[in-house]
Length: 142
Image 1 (cartoon, rainbow, N blue to C red):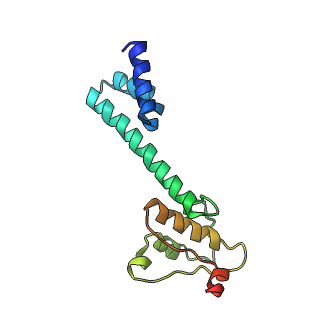
Image 2: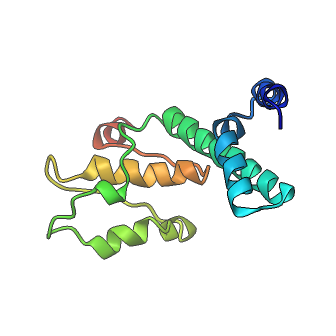
Image 3: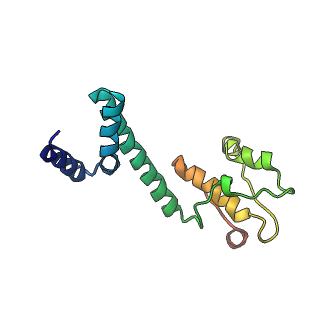
């Protein structure tokens, strides 16, 4: 591939807004050349990058629109000994939704209620499912 062809290719990716592909073009070309992948395998790798990029942007936008106070997940949560970890892990399966039940996180200030609620909400956002998170102030006003 000549420099002119390569520049044209990158220009096309930019025009088509293929940011994921554009960010990984050199890496993919090297991968194809070094591991003797076929052109089709290289194209699959490039379109996978684009799919991942777009999916990540959709998730990020959904989380931003959701107005979550942070982007922390359960991996960032400090499970104290008085918190039932198995029960919290069960919440992320969203089984309670299919059983038409609600969940409420109760505890003292700093226990992690907001963190758990936001983490659960972010999981909903990533799956592009709807949910409502309320705090006690909101409940008392309704």
